[in-house]
Image 1 (cartoon, rainbow, N blue to C red):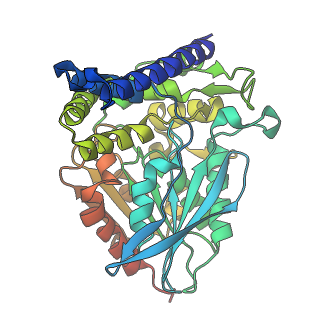
Image 2 (cartoon, rainbow, N blue to C red):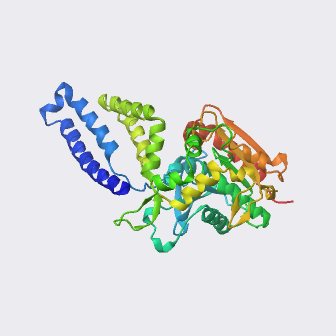
Image 3 (tube, rainbow, N blue to C red):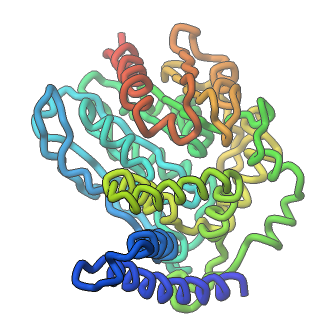
Length: 415
């Protein structure tokens, strides 16, 4: 019933958004006298804010056509190189990229948003790297005939994608960068590949704001997961996809619930952002208003996760802390983090991160007991919140250069 209620609400809001948009255009029409009255622009701005907030959203496009490198605009080519039911592998390359440029797999989170949330991450890294991105599917679009997808499958996908990218010319595997939630499966995949001496194991792994050990500086997100038994999540937030979707009958954790949770954490800030957008519109500052619109176009574009992946992640990562305790398994086999012996690890945390607290990602450096200290590095991004670790000015000017330097240092040929 919950999913059906959401679909009804979305249909109503879609119509209301269209009406509000028409009203905003009418009040802004220079040929209508009402536009010249004192309340005309104010009313038009208010309606435009509502229309934007209520508009339905689908999967956004990456839309990275050009980047600037060495002061020159360079065309970017986007291609899908692997198709899998629950996620594709995309590749981004730019014009003029050196043949020996490092290969980087950016692992996008499967946490309710599309991979396009990392558009800024990809845009910055494609300046210096051949970039690959995990483009996870919306679970409600995957037919039941494709089977399940859980945390074990996620790890398998990462190993498969690294294998497809293959070793680099220096004999090392591609570099890997995990943003937030996938730090856990990415670290596990690295350990598994290390134990197997897989030829495509990553040369470096950069983990950004990841919940490796959520016992360190627990946040509101961690508290919510700890305060309720796993059966509460199974019975309360897991729903069945309605018949109008390709994945009809699949049990999922819907993206709209995840979005509602994130919005409620900083509701005052979101209200203030929309009020600022309203003020920008009333004075004709379209550029500032558009910047806010662009952010929320991405932020409100959400997708569903399979129930098994969501529940396993909640239980293993946030409740049992199994990776940190050494009890994490993959396909029934223990995952030994000491098997990471030659993949260099970089842990990046945000000083103001309210999703993954300080110390949660850094814990990976301690857990990798088989790795030399010289291959471990930690970066605390001053003033950065969770989103700011991988997007925005701090990311572009401070964090990304540090990640590039780390990859360059540890991306040399094996001795």
